[in-house]
Image (tube, rainbow, N blue to C red):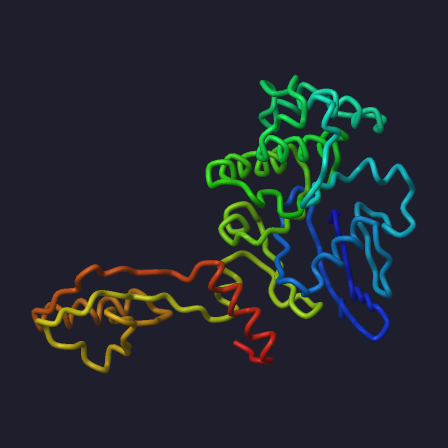
Length: 302
């Protein structure tokens, strides 16, 4: 069974249609990155999935229930980490978790959850004295203490320094190991590429891409760049190599890297030309994401 199943989701505010037939699914035990620019309809879709906003039309099932009519017991099966939250500053991290656990019939052990999020040594600290990274860990702990089947993570590493971000990735990956399904939103493309089993891109209220980072790159026929520094003392490459200039670099964009490299190195050997600072750069998820959004906004197709 899928943790989330959405078909033909529409949401309008008067004459403004925000979601225009959104289709989405999240498999059990999967981490799905749900990406979209501001105004794409991403937040509206998530609020509908969480049961905080009513849809105009379409079919929505979250853990087998319609969020608009789901019973209170359903709430115990989901965990939500908001982009921003404010803990009770006079409570310690442990006391906050004990209080949260009291809302659930079968919560996880508080000590276990503190260990999972890396707050064992900080459990006795007042939340007002926790660092920003520690507070974010507490946010995740509050979502996990009810032992949810599905976790919504909204921009979980916003404001983190690089070290804290990478530490948090291990925590998020551990959710998969514990059997949780995760819907992740993030503006960090490297985060999505590393953590997600699958990526969905929304633009203009509809899904414009769905798959792995490689699938998305294939969808737009993204090309690999072969680049090297042009040497003033050697001849320019021949036109047959299909190269162009980018500042001081010569660049070949190709889908057949092996063939392009073979042609390039053969020419360099025959002509005695040097390939200074030669590099092969595959398109990353950020390149792919921006191109997908651009194509959707301009009405182009790959």
